[in-house]
Amino acid sequence: MIASHDLAMALDPVAMARSAGLVLDPWQAKLTRSQSSRILVNCSRQSGKSTTTAALADHTAFYEPDSPILLLSPSLRQSSELFRKCLEIYRALGRPVKADAESALRLELENGSRIISLPGKEGTVRGISKVKLLIIDEASRVPDELYKAVRPMLAVSGGRLILLSTPWGTRGFYHQEWQRRDKWDYYEVTAHDCPRISKEFLEEEKETMGEWYYAQEYLCKFMDNETAAFRSEDIEHIVKPGVATWDL
Image (tube, rainbow, N blue to C red; front, side):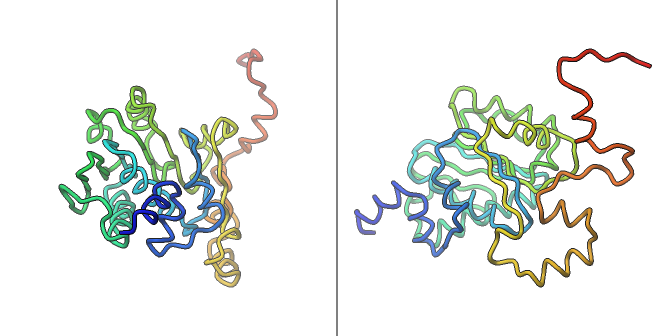
């Protein structure tokens, strides 16, 4: 590999992705270049979130030695899919850093970095420390207890946290963090922002799924339960933080 080319990839994760054959959308390029320690991604299905974060995970592993990188999802199958994208980029680049160990769920590099794929279960993640990059995929479906269990992994390392998901109702830590999204480097990517999803396909999906599911899966909307008597946004307007309430 030419030294100047390697330097360009080290300085710019977008250049690294391009070398792996990936053409990033503008929001994807912005995210991979973000220096924020907290990134929140609210995105449509099939918008490219996994590819984006896989590129960022690889760039961290290659160019920040001794970096533990943890990929979490509700199930092992989901986290292994995200890890598979990491491997695809790694191999497309010709393995820029030699591997000490390479499997379907783990990549350990000779520079001391490692990318580990785990299911979203508290018992499987405790004991991992000094995490440099923590990516929680499908975060809206990850239990609150797990989120609370993994955040301390970033305490000593000052590591980065990325939450990415399609919404799944007005509940859980992902919805709570979305409500305070001004504290995060926040990205909202609807299906209309993805050039790979056709207008015809979306029209078919809307007709098939109905407004409620379509708004959540493709328009990044946090939808209340269809049987709820009141909308959460109406309750938020009525009940003001810090104001005392009484039982009736």
